[in-house]
Length: 139
Image 1 (cartoon, one colour):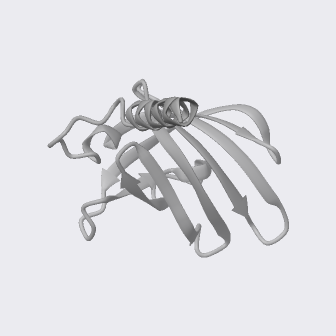
Image 2 (cartoon, rainbow, N blue to C red):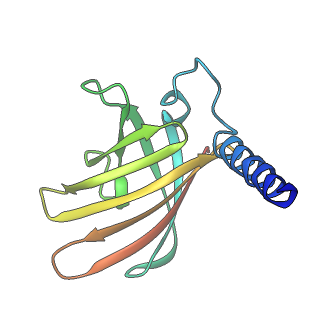
């Protein structure tokens, strides 16, 4: 009985610790979208195009959805191209959508941590499926 109780306590502490770490950058009563807004540098590693690409992106709030952001110059497609992403705490969800005049289908996710946003997503242009890892940081 004592070993079962001890295991239950250890498991409970593990769950509590895991939940606290995921929300380390979340401040209660603060707008979770706010920390994503503004000008960023994007360092992108692509299976199709290689690594070492660094370019500017601008993140704004979607005026039609307060928990959604618009990422301009996503996948280095120009400032007029904007990808939509939902924000839930520190998590970013890039829903399946098309950009660049409906020629590139994107989808992925990411996380805000330590003042940076780390993203993993796919981009499919009808011929090549590109797996991309991107790091957004403040200039």
